[in-house]
Length: 179
Image 1 (cartoon, rainbow, N blue to C red):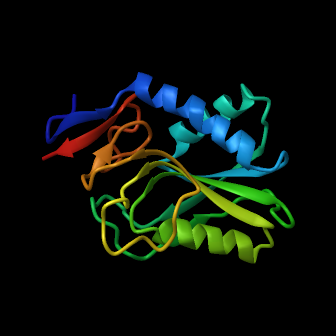
Image 2 (image 1 turned 45 degrees about the vertical axis):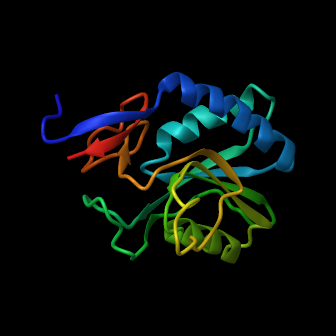
């Protein structure tokens, strides 16, 4: 088991599942019928998979692809430098895009991703995040999410796809990292 830190549960698996159902409803109503869902790896992979399944339950079946961006490495604080490691392969020209990410903090990563997809010709690029850390923080983020699962405290969180030094991704809940 993990021994160099402890986790304090923040959002349980059942709480996340319930929110995903309602979030999929919001997206189904607000997104056009045809769109591309692009998950930002690695942290969003569990959230994106569950969200796409929740959308399918509402007869919404977007094309799905992935981008890999990096700014954290093995640290708990972003380097501030966003790097594109893998681009989405699906053509986005004249298509609506839903960017899916695990967490919105400074907004640099999502702003980079959205601007990149718009530069590739996307008709629109909306943002969906599981967690929004920005609601009570100044300065405000560089981008705002169109769809949010939960407001998140200003703590480092892990689980449900999000990691701490490549650990904890498989946990079915979101927890605060206590070192």
